[in-house]
Length: 319
Image 1 (cartoon, helix red, strand yellow):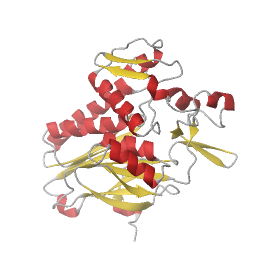
Image 2 (image 1 turned 30 degrees about the vertical axis):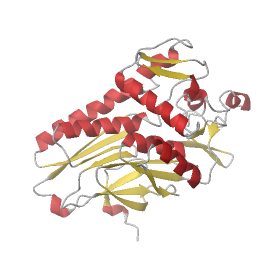
Image 3 (image 1 turned 45 degrees about the vertical axis):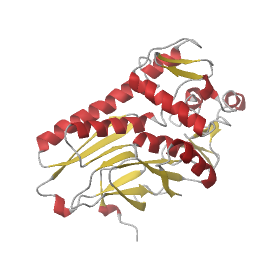
Image 4 (image 1 turned 90 degrees about the vertical axis):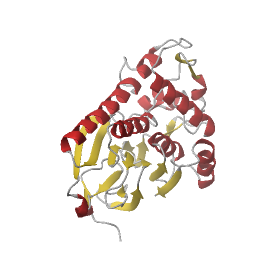
């Protein structure tokens, strides 16, 4: 039987919910948690620790990492690494930070491993289809400008920075940077001596340690049709979870849903009966990009991509 909504606490936004803390843990440990807007969604950090002041300092450090990653990798700020790269003339080198270079290189690796199913250079197409501003599909001529796949080939990353060789290409790290930010926040918690905690940014989540008495954290996957309902419960400890779905960012036009997960081959939202895909991995970067890449993929294609790019990751739920 699926758990009821009462079995889950408010910690959990987007596609995931987190089970309430077992009664046995309420003393002597405390669950200290905080929620802020970050990375275009809501970020939540919960720490299990005896010392509330210590936990609050650790949460400060974790949230600072999320803000830093957002500040440097968002495409919505002209002064971010990505914003400066997108504003540069085709072929011009742009100096970016070490973490940005790492995520750009990982994006290229996933694009290659997935044969273009993941493309970090669809920023202009993402802007064209943005559910926050769009109420009907764009004109066919506008869509065709970004169709055909392969824009990721325009991205070059080296020790000094990055450059784009095609004026149609604009970097959008929305399918991978959030996961990297969650990993960075989790590292900050560990650096502060916190080993039992959760970091959740809009459904990209890392579970550290256990909820208590050796029990893993219980993570609920929300139903696409009703976000108050949990359709699958996962036991997670020292692993990452990410879910992609068509029900969080979308607009509807003439009976069809147009979501934010674009197909690089068509330059338009992917057409698939799949509603939700959940990935478990060692790192949240891997879970995040895998969920984005494999949404709508066949089981054989998904297996092939994971074997190439993240052999330790696995699909844990589809709907």
